[in-house]
Length: 77
View 1 (tube, rainbow, N blue to C red):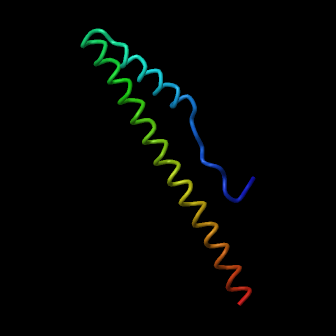
View 2 (view 1 turned 90 degrees about the vertical axis):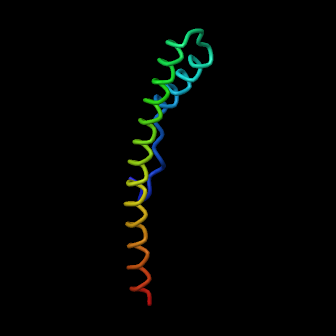
């Protein structure tokens, strides 16, 4: 396991967003447009939750790395 992990990307969320966006572009009724809009909003909320989780994870890893650098600097100095 690496000290810093690569950002996680959920491909299924990206695919769901693209699919909902495509449906939104091809609707012919208000009802269909509303359903497509709700799908886009749900996908957007899921992506925002994922980004928030990713930010927390990266903050934790950044703090760990910063702490390790400080310890190494203090030991060297």
